[in-house]
Length: 333
Image 1: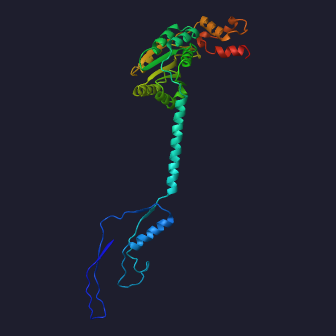
Image 2: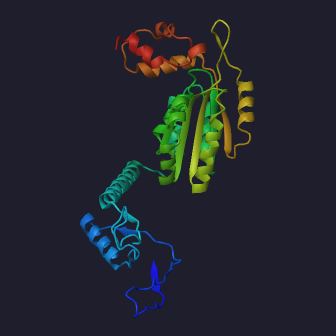
Image 3: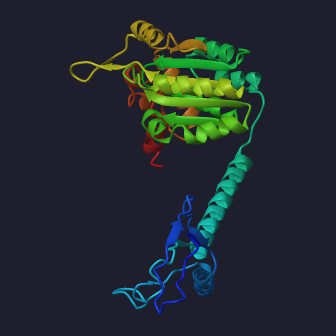
């Protein structure tokens, strides 16, 4: 507050003084808050210095204290004091630093555990599939051709009945590649996409496998499109393998599989997905294929008769599924 006084006339011939006129010029500048970031004692001293420097006027009529304030302090300018808590600010910076260190450490850890190979060894993959996957030569040829295609985004859809080798084929490919992510449908929806997306940032090529799909799992399509789009934006290579069971449970709990209709349905669902696509059918296995599965599992076991063991399996319903666990049970392992 600025105070200016007008000249005053005093009658020297009288013992009284004529009342004087006092005018005030209010400053149009807004009152800015004073921010004290020092200790409470220092803040008090600074405040006292401001009060001492501020012009003030007395009540000239009475010269006495008013009801609430002592004389001469009615017009003291008021200041808003904002105290900054240095301890609170320091704690915030400490927490922020710790969070940053943890985030960087976690990122470095994930980068170090990744092993990235630039190319899948197609010759080794083909040799492995030829030796270990029975009754699916056509499917093997399509898989090898698709894996060897020189495109950045591939979508391979494996379909067929129970126990015909779809998941087994994917696991054999998994064993020959790096940066592979193998999910079943339920945990894919729970875990996706955190670890996969990190791997896509680090490695040039990635393989995503999702198992246990049915024709009703159409919600996966939007996730697949997102993965492909992300991979293309990063200029990386992505191979997506989706594994579908085409079996349908009929009345009486019997299984049937119309693979021709199933493939038509899949093509319709994925028609708008922009990627190299291959629909790979896995054929129903025969008793001869089942025998080969059992012989491979037995190896040097002392079980007397394979024909006797085969009576415990129904290749039409289960293919080679469960051979490993049933052989262990029959051997008393």
